[in-house]
Image 1 (tube, protein in one colour):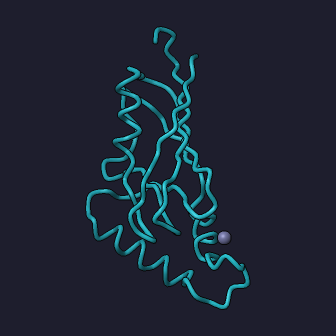
Image 2 (image 1 turned 90 degrees about the vertical axis):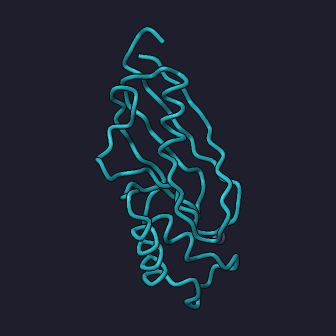
Image 3 (image 1 turned 135 degrees about the vertical axis):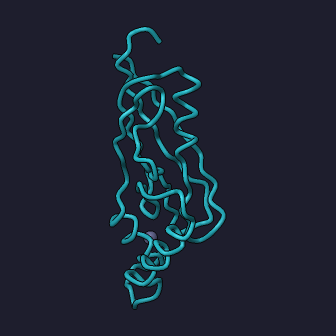
Length: 139
Ligand code: ZN
């Protein structure tokens, strides 16, 4: 088994944003010719997160963002002096890592699934770590 660690830089443009990063992860697989293995992605932030969901209909992203804002409103008499408690809460609700299966050089996702980076306190330049464990010996 061989492993590789890659760092993706994501420049977010809005305060709250869902960015499909599936292609950026699969680009690493293609460039390194990794056909089979496991991929762990991790976000080292406290106000950004990761999730997997539908990437076919953009209305899913709009509905997702709207409902998250309802569940955790930006203003709610929070005590945290930085003023971004909602972003911290939403990030923990969604989580900071995903584990994915690599098969035939691609992420083994459902037909309608994509990997999303979730910005909850942007715009900022963010980092996503991608750790790949290939089960091939010849790369
Ligand atoms: Zn804070």
